[in-house]
Image 1 (tube, helix red, strand yellow):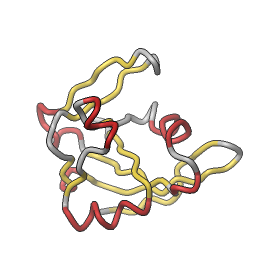
Image 2 (cartoon, one colour):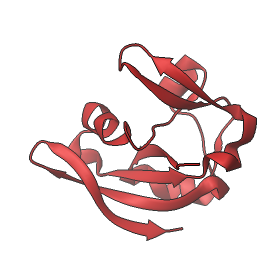
Image 3 (cartoon, rainbow, N blue to C red):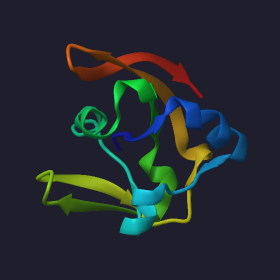
Image 4 (cartoon, one colour):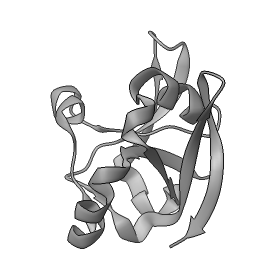
Length: 116
């Protein structure tokens, strides 16, 4: 299975790493699931929701590790299918790598990859 992704502002990473899990953010709580992306949607998601000042970090996730709590659902506003996690939190044990995003020319691209 192809990896899936979660974008977080860089300043949140130390707290997430220390806790061993990523708790849902306000939008996740409102929608009832943890928002995730796949390879086809992750950079567009970063462009839409993460200003360059947030220095977004992408968590690469093994979808198999999330089990049956992971669902793929069509999102009409984006005209794409997205992975959604219906769980209390995203365990960091499912994170296989971290990616720095670089903002150039008005959009993001993947930068350095750091194994976990």
